[in-house]
Length: 418
Image (cartoon, rainbow, N blue to C red; front, top):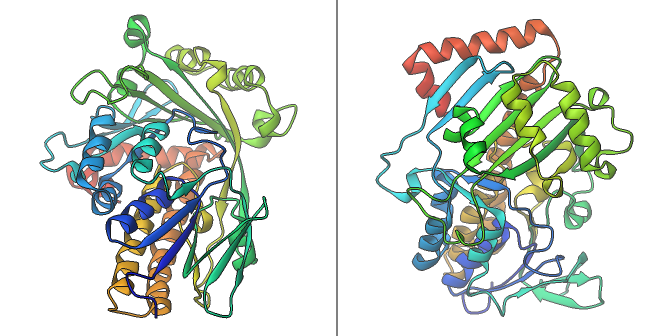
């Protein structure tokens, strides 16, 4: 059995979860290498925010050196003050105040840009992270090692191979060909724009305070949030990133009725179609869409993993979206990947210390990850279905539920912890 000095972990994918795991393994003295298909650290990364919740913050703190966790905190935007649900005319449905008095950094929500977070997570890993390396598969060796094969003909060998290569994971397809993702039939359009004084004054107040979720008619849904760097927690990247509003609009594919598949639609067409569907919405919400910088717009089909049962554990395992890819409607995908990294780090350290064998440790990780990961998948899918209900009756029931929760403090507390 490999000991701490000989255990070698290969991670495919330099996303949030993969890099968090790599940082933890490095700090614990376990050899690790990361291989990423992006050509550079900033390829394909958009500046949209991730919301790192208390669970995600705890995972980062447990895996990162103290100075890097401090950089993460300093680089984050102002924590949200509230989460607000509205109807499409800005009528209030439910308002949830978020604590501003948390004593520990791991007790609050931290909005961060993907670019900043990756930059923090890469620090100190220069010799361990290899870019422009597309993994095409793996083979098992007679000596119980695993060999990862890359598109350029090179290979990497280790005792454990961690597939953290995202929702379209090639390694998942090889390991678990029966593990599928479904197209939910929902299409999302997102964009952002920089905040100036005029935009600050005109933006709906809830948007400036935190995540704002808008339940519209005909199965349409909107999310909007201001990301502010110039107040209580000035970002480490303040000279590079200005305050902005990000928004997302989603609807059933047939209602958006694009002229081409979503990934081929232009920002001009997408924005115009969204504004058509928002014809009778409050003008302040329409203005958020109209102000979007076309260069920031993204259009995609919303997909979701199909839950599967545990499999026969080997020395190839999965992390994050590579297994439990979920819809964006609960905003917990990155946090669940960080939870994976924290759990797998802890168990691999126990293997390195000789406290348990490798395969039983990986089996323990997979059982837990399957349980909480697919719970998150189902919860996210349920929210998506609720937010995009076309039936006026179903939409009315959801609005009534939110208004009821809004009036009862105990229900609000339970809702926040759901």
